[in-house]
Image 1 (tube, one colour):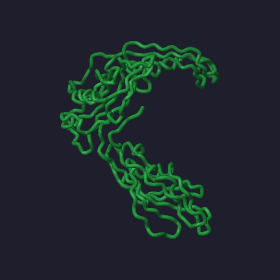
Image 2 (cartoon, rainbow, N blue to C red):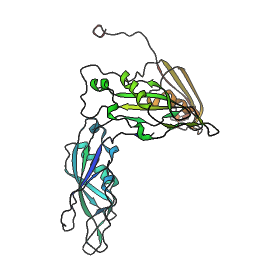
Image 3 (cartoon, rainbow, N blue to C red):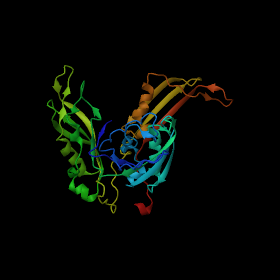
Image 4 (cartoon, rainbow, N blue to C red):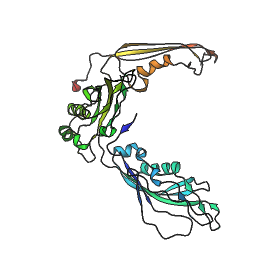
Length: 359
């Protein structure tokens, strides 16, 4: 699923500060490489027969990208600069990495060495005779979080066949900071609005319906206001003729960095996973070799999906074309035997019994 960001989630830059085992050359000017602005020109390979340090192949800006920001550091908005030194082998690959100047955060430092070791490739160093040898290279990665804005997904699911509507200009799905509802901004409200769009045969949005609330009426209403401006390539019928279509989208509302969060009031949940009651039962028979012989799935009520063990996924177990095989069950004497497995999961509602202080 593609996600289109209004701005990069995290800006990571690499600042050149080369250290080598070869005699030092006049220091080059410091060059900042920002992954969100594009890479710097690639360095030329070393001349054969000339002493030289390890030289990066390609741009160091590709060694760390926005997706590498440690989750906890991103959540806590921690930034810093991690200086590192790597040893480069005769094959041009990193053989060792050490932090020479900490960012002040262990996870950022660990991510620095992990990404450089995995991605950096060099022209190996050469000695005075031009023979390939090992060497060292030093640099810094700047971990920096810019303003985080809201973003919308492309179509998550379509009810239009054979060709569903497609965004005519995906840049329109980038949600500008000024589109954040003033009331939600003032109260520090965030969340994800999930909604359907009805697209006519000209590609224009004719209808919007919220299927899952963000927990904020202002955000949900604004999701429909924002999406009404989007333009689509209309759906096509079996004859290739433009026709009505419907798509489903997420709009993730995130407060810009630095916006005061309101913590005095209670946190408003974005959804209730136990709102609907129901259950499902998966019955599987395995023979003595561990091969599935029979499979049956039964669902009651409107029990909603609750992650990887939800009914939607479990129902597919019986629909798989390939026969599932597991490690055989054994009896008390350790001999393989056939066994029936019954897996149940459900939600029931009843009157709550609360302690006096919670009533």
